[in-house]
Length: 324
Figure 1 (tube, rainbow, N blue to C red):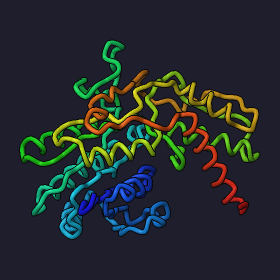
Figure 2 (tube, rainbow, N blue to C red):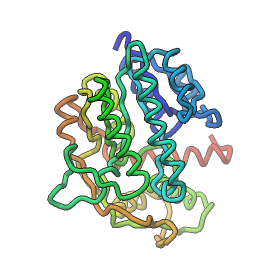
Figure 3 (cartoon, rainbow, N blue to C red):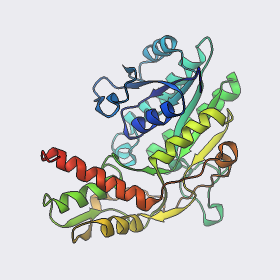
Figure 4 (cartoon, rainbow, N blue to C red):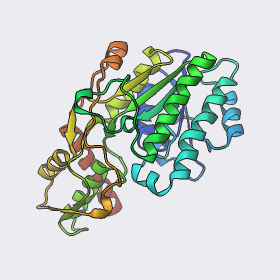
């Protein structure tokens, strides 16, 4: 990708480091942003320019894009926790909707507007009937929580900018992505953290869980960022693309894999505080459009992802204990 300059907005989170590494491997020149109060430890080893940016500051967003002049913008910055969106709906709207508009307006003002990938979520589809599974990009959006509603709004606004202004905007609906380094605010990260804490005697041998019956489409984050890079190179502006594995697994089955991989004898207990007010029972991606456009298919199995995630969590725990 000689001459292609990527800007990752919101790179300090779970996906950012993986996307930086993927884009560099694919030949992009990469710059990234983070919030001023966010640590750059995750991405510091990538040796790229990192800028502090608050996407709620429209002038700052426009100024930075004019300075960097990217050819492609990956908009990752978001309040991405469904649970937190119920507690902080206004914050979620400010970041996910107003922030996305600020990015789109800044790109529109560029002398040569960049291609934009707006990273959304499978949560936008909400509850779908069995007859609609797997969901494709033409499935109506029926968001069932605050986070999903903001991502659906981002998606629709992106499509409007593409049509009204002729901008090169792609809407990406990412299904559940998992892997080493994921926050315990998400189920797999939480289960792996609790498991390792139990192995190390830092927690009683009980994993506390919420709804285990929900079925989700899980993909390794390293496969996900490979899809993002390919979409930046081969996707068609104005379209939405599902990024997922194409196979739904229950949260229960994921937990069972983690327990089998554990070195401890662990029992499971329900914790009502971990249940969401509304939870979609089943979602599974149709990834035909993505595969036809880019040739992408997932390569890393869920079992391998879980093994890598547990290994990463054990290494983090040992580091905290001063063990190399």
